[in-house]
Structure formats: C-alpha cells, structure tokens
Length: 214
Image: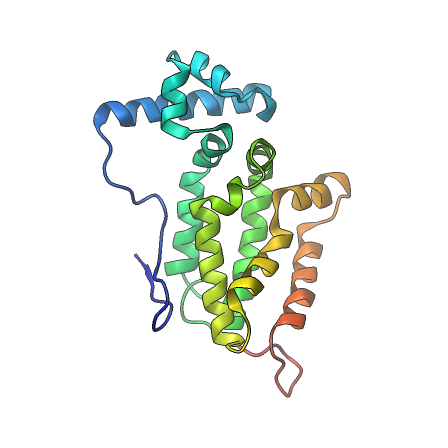
C-alpha cells in the first residue's frame, strides 16, 4: 500500500506494518497500551509514567521499558491506529487528499487534514512532546508526513530544497501551538486553515490568474 514518489525517491508506505509479533509479546503490548489508555482517560497525561503504567498493567517496569523505551514512545503508540487511518487517506484515499489531484491541491488538503488530526489528538501528542521534545520528529508518523510533503513540494517547486522546506511547512503543526490557539485563544480551526492558505500562497508558484499553481 502506498504511492511512488518519483524516480530516485522513497516510496511512502503506511506505518505499523511490522512483522507479526509473538503471541505473548502482542498480549503484553496490548496490556501496556490498555493500561496507559486508562490512566490517560482517568487521570490525564501527567499520570502516564512508566512505573504507573507497569503497576496498572500488572507487570514489571522493565517489561514496559523493553517494549516502549520511554513515555513519549508509549504515548505515540496509543495514536498508532488513528495514524494508520490518516496515512491510508493521504496515500490511497480519494482526491484531493489522495492521488488524482494536482500536487498543490493535495498539499493544501493534506495540511487541512493534518490540522484536524493533530487537533483531535493534541493532548496525547503534547504529553509525548513534553516527555521527549524530539520524539515527534523521530517518529514514523512524522517521517511519513515529511516524505509526503517533500514529494508534493518537489512536484510544485522543483528548484527548492524540498526537504528543508517540508520541515518548515510542518513546523506550525505542533500540538503545542494548535492547543494554544484552540484552547487558550479560542481560535477556530477554520481560521487556522485560512492562515495555512496564506502560508501556501507564499511557498507555491502563482499562475497567471493569481491562484497557486497545481
């Protein structure tokens, strides 16, 4: 599943397609995730520590560390299913988010969808970022977002350094900023998306009719 991104470029694939786990490892993973999910729902993200999760799951903390490494990785794993659905939509779903639309239209649709995705999960994502500020950028999810945006930028601005420009385009989509605008300032997501349009207008080439080229 995925889409080719051009000659010499990576092929994007949906995350989470790892080799099949042993039955006992899969059970432990599920117990840990269920325990973390309960703690998150009942006590908030601050309650999700490796020791607390181990106690709630009824297992040793060493098992939790061996499976997930740190709290940030554990929290991001809670989002894995939703992230897979999101990636399936922009890799293989209907246009304009999926294949079939001009690259500029796909980029706009992706950033709109990313806004909704992060807004829906901002509490968990922010907790992961707080636990490890670099966790998001090292995650399989961010790698996929960056590769997708880079591919679309290559098709719209081939003269640009697409890798760096993709990072800069994705920078405003951190959970902290979206939570601040939504929760602290009461900014509707539609206003955020309107600002995305202005941002893209500065990044994409303009056609003779004044619209962004696609």
